[in-house]
Length: 358
Image (cartoon, rainbow, N blue to C red; front, top):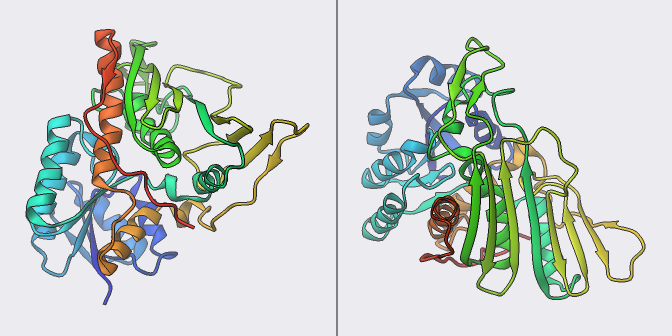
């Protein structure tokens, strides 16, 4: 009998998870909850789910084993805590929380209750990052030395009908998009030991471009262009630039430099972006064959959740671990703190390098 999954939060990201159940047969969604009950009913009809409940009702439902937390970042920690204390396993969208102490409390609750917590993103288990992982592990570029990563675009207001929360503390380009890039980096190189960063806010105000609030302006309350220098425990150095201030760029999104060549990822936050390699004496770049089949967005978005379910059922470690979620959050928050304080920060947390999924 498969584990039953409930969902709290039926916003823009929920269809990707619910769609993934049509690809992973161990994703059995049985109930939905949202503050907006009409939205929850809409999703239930769209994906043929029978139960639409309040959050309290969903947490009290005995048949639910796992709850998928798709709420907004500022309440991730509270909802995950409620899930764990209700005696259920929790899978949270990224980031794990918007406060380091809340993140640590969640891990303490995990240890106390024996329930599990997993944290998105799932992209590091997709074909793109796993192909790069295999190439590096196989020694195709020799010893990894450094990486350059650029997440550059002009924000969410052109496609999201309610983009304000992306520009509040607890969000911004680092906390919103950073997890995809950092999860890829940690997958390739392991944990970060320390960092230094600088940051600016490029635009004091933004304007919503679509939906019923189109034309409305709002204030920006968090840095929107962050440069971070990362030092990994294994000696690799990486530069990560996350920005909502850039109109156009021709910079590569993700490159890894080794003693014998370079690997280039078209996009580390994608499941099916090309991975190319150019060894020291090659004249041209060569595209690598994907190492895994998980490369279609609507199918693969749930891969880390499916891995979580499988790990619970088979009693082994899941890859999108709470420890990694905490480590990624500390990297991101330390980047903002380093920029604000103009100082180098040594990280307190660490995590295991996740096992490859091949």
